[in-house]
Length: 169
Image (cartoon, rainbow, N blue to C red; front, side, top):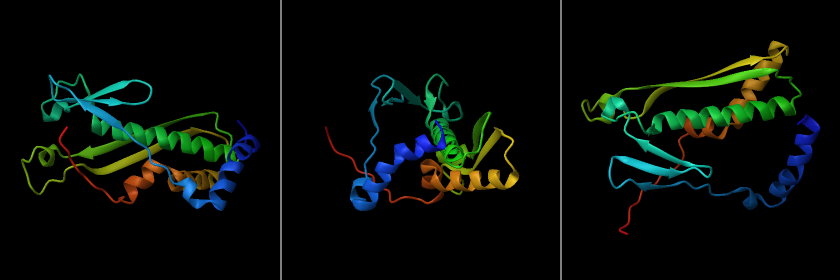
């Protein structure tokens, strides 16, 4: 897809959202079922069933997916799609590239060993390795816009309003 094709694809959506801002607000959903035989949750991904379980550092077998890994994978996926879309829109040729994310966790917090240790990632690093001949100014612009428009990055960067509830089934 080139820049013109991307603009043509997105133009009607942008116009619709300008004219009817409420139409741009959608609710994405995820659902999982608790496993009845192990400490695991079966998550419907839309393409397959992902089984998440405890990380080995918290007593898991390592056979199931770790939700922390899944968070980093979601960040990599979103950032990868965003960098490609922005490069296409800016007509920055990318021959190839990789996106990687790594995050630091202190499992003392997760396991309640140390009340001062944080629960969750205390640092996440997102890295792009891009094969392109574009000048540095264009790469700087690409990175800035990718950071700005990556949904997962921005969600992590600016804490959304959160709510938790439970009901009996």
